[in-house]
Image (tube, rainbow, N blue to C red; front, top):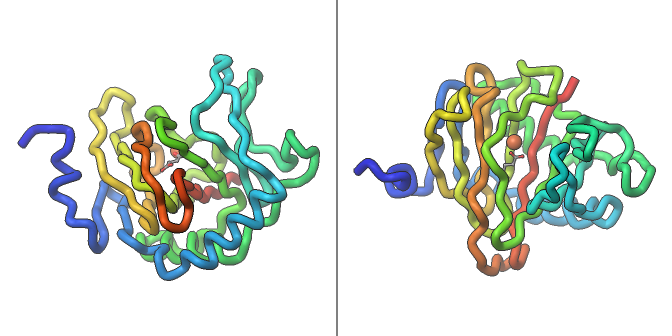
Length: 217
Ligand code: SIN
Ligand code: FE2
């Protein structure tokens, strides 16, 4: 088998899947906390609704985004940055719910990164067809801390590559409750999400929600 879907076939959907040094998929890690996570998520987006950001190049992103925590990731014609104020509301981002921070710390510790205290949580909303092109998370000042990414709702195909954009990424299906952690030597790995396939999730409907925890400073 030499196809792009090696990983999709080889991965039986249980336990941890190693993606590289300091990087793993923790299958179903967030499942036991889904009620608390979805409840906190719903309360949070009432204060900071999803919006489609514009890239520095002038494109509207297909993924809708919002944030919670001390700072939030924003993009506009002037560039990408972390900002303490939601530019849409003019107010600080909603506080990071305890249920979010706790789960992120547990997943990081499980992968070998003890003491992870994220100060930012980017929340992505993918509707059918939405995608995220290969990129590195490199706007954070603290590159010793890992990235912790929680998938909720519809399944998606996640791409996880190397340190160069040209390294062919592996593809892994992420489903509701899966958590991906990447840090250490894998902290700057390229990653992305393939266009979302349509479907209906019992808890979240026709969307995929991704929570990405970062320590920015
Ligand atoms: C991201 O890279 O910000 C999100 C990844 C994902 O949605 O799984
Ligand atoms: Fe990312």
